[in-house]
Image (cartoon, rainbow, N blue to C red; front, side, top):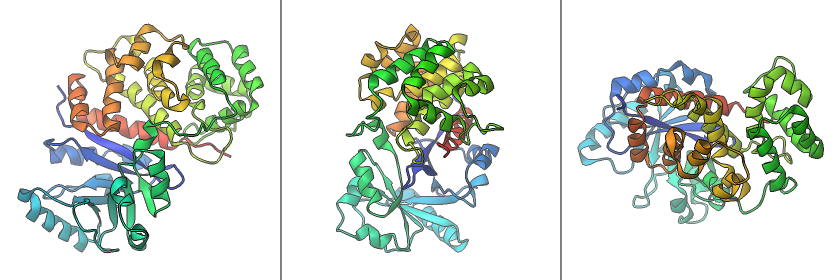
Length: 393
């Protein structure tokens, strides 16, 4: 059983679709050990994130030390605290305001919105926001930073961006966009590339695909020259990428390549970052499962399971349909289609987190023997790495 309660980290999207902040949440009813929380928030991994980005942390009656995040933290208060916590929450809010620390309010449709500037940040559900009179959010945004939550569709995302929200959650990434962003790269070509990757095809076979589709080669070179890799010298050709990276590392970048948009080299793709974070997170957590997973299921295979887990969203196809065309080992197919086996159970944890079913995610982590500290550090390492992936010009 996990010895500490897990806490969950969520990237927040900015207006340009890049990760521009993060929020932290706890499972409902979790007994938060404040000493453990302070230890986790003092992790040196937090120093690897952009210090300009805010971290939204839930208020707890009595407060707690935000550690490395003190200068970046926004303490978020509920609109309706539990009656037994109301007085303590009021005292905490007053002390934070006196210390000129940033505070936020998680709004409720049943409560009148506060005036502009009364809080540094306001969190508002997208359905609640869309029910408000026109220009309400624009007026609030003059003095308050607005964060849209429960953004379940691409239409929701477009609406909140057009109505002054500077940050939003990213539930909509689990749904398929109405328009195909890869119109000039057919599904067949993508699946052909994925098949070659899975089969560990020789260099010539891979090179042939890139010759057929020059934009793929261009996208790959931008990707491997990204900040997450930081090569000593720019990589300028496919053969050079193989020589400098080695096939093992190159295979990983090829898995992520299918999520990049060759038509737009400057715009971040949040689905690419999400796939990268999933791959790295499952890879890290696979080493923590008790009892240990078979060696063939950790590292490269675990990373692949994470990155491939969003192919159905990317390609607009069902996962069984995709898997019929990919020569994956049986345990990998079962993990992706049925969440079976150790890697499948880890994927089920991530899906539960994405659906904000944190009670289920906590239970699954405990069943896998993954400690809360290890889970928190794995999230930081995965998100820290994925946040640095960008398509360089």
